Amino acid sequence: MTKTASIIGGGVIGGGWAARFLLNGWDVRVFDPDPEAKRKIGEVLANARAALPMLYDYALPAEGALTFHSSITEAVTGASWVQESVSERLELKHKVMAEIQAANPGVPIGSSTSGFKPSELQQGATDPSKILVTHPFNPVYLLPLIEVVPSPATDPAVVDVADDLLTSVGFYALRVRKEIDAHIADRFLEAVWREALWLVKDGIATTEEIDNAIRYGFGIRWAQMGLFETYRVAGGEAGMRHFMEQFGPALKWPWTKLMDVPEFTDELVDLIADQSDDQSGHLTIRELERKRDNNLIAMMRALKQQGNAAGQLIKTHQQTLRPELEATKPMLSTRRVVPIDWTDVNGHMNEGRYGQLFSDAAEEVMAYVGADDDYIAGGNSYFTVETTVKYIAETHAGESVDVWTTVTVGEGKKLRCFHEMKRTSDGELMATCDQFMLHVSLESRRTCEPLPHVREKVEALAALHAEE
Image 1 (tube, rainbow, N blue to C red):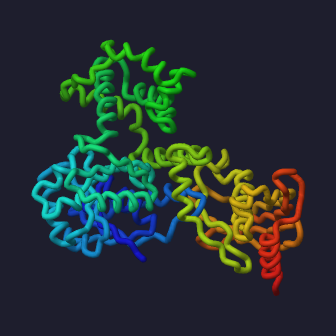
Image 2 (tube, one colour; image 1 turned 180 degrees about the vertical axis):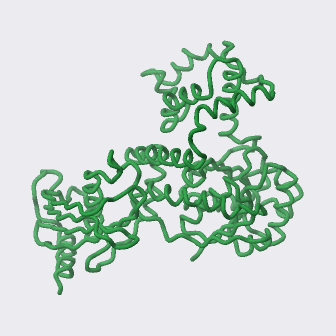
Image 3 (cartoon, rainbow, N blue to C red; image 1 turned 60 degrees about the vertical axis):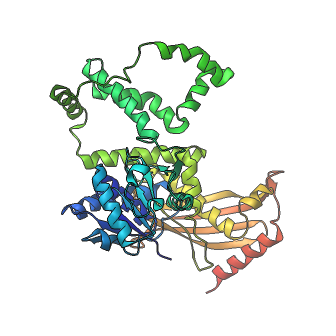
């Protein structure tokens, strides 16, 4: 069944929401009075199309339909979820909420607000129980965190709907226990931002030096451990209690100015803007976005390989994307987008990654015949003993590729697959792999006969693929 989301406000955040929903198979209806909205969302969507599919080992679902509408009433008609992302003006948000609820009574409404509490958004609403905060982080189509903030007036069932819906498109829904101005993450970021302003104003560091302190040091730790787990490790074998005892006294030292804010003078604005221009002015915003996206993809995919933090979330979500193989001749064993971290110094896919791709295809065939995760956990599997790969055409990051597999031998301990990798868009043959595997006992690490149910499916698939 097609799902429909309505996006009210098509700026950077609204455009990111539209991209996240579209690329997960939702239809998206947009309202934004800005005459440039279609172009702006189109540019955000182009970045998302290049980036989001690279996170996963399976193809995303077919993209939904994107439509633009001339009124809020028209945009929210038929929507099962409405995401409000208009400017941070409370009176404007109240007006928008009223129009949404008049046009589509009962629809859940999530607000992207970074500062307002849900109880403030609900003031004067026809049905406050359907309104809550769902605050994302830029780029919305890549970063998984969503702060889900209800008020006491929000229907708990609506919060559950929001949680399930956001999880289904790859988000991590962090439920905020009590509503508070700026929620959780932005309060933390605000503290860091204030201290950074003082460091620049007092001539202690430039904008680039502050960014370097973050990205070369604690920022990498935070990406996979957060704050408290990082400090627990810093406490050594004695753990967090030891850390608190050792560093607790520092809280009384005058290190920070968190309760004090530098005056936002024209001179301070010019100083920071000029330093930022020196730091990054040689790149356009689109180039900076692509650089950011590629770095995020590589980091999150590394975390996925380790099954940690955001990587575990992607790993879990991509299982919902895993297609069921069909017994065709040949069979489409894998479809995916080549990620940025699979390329080498020549700018194309590294030869080792062809082996990865064909190995993934073989594992899908194994799962199809019953040699799946449970089978392997039970002590049996197939080991590759020989491969022959032929590289025919260059493969680049961002390209969607298909692997078509033919089982050429399937008898006893033997399973042999011939894989053809083709570009999805035009079917051009890019590489082939002849892969020979033997069934083994994981206990003895020696060859053995497969269990009967696996042997039968292997033989049936080999017979199908042998037919003229």
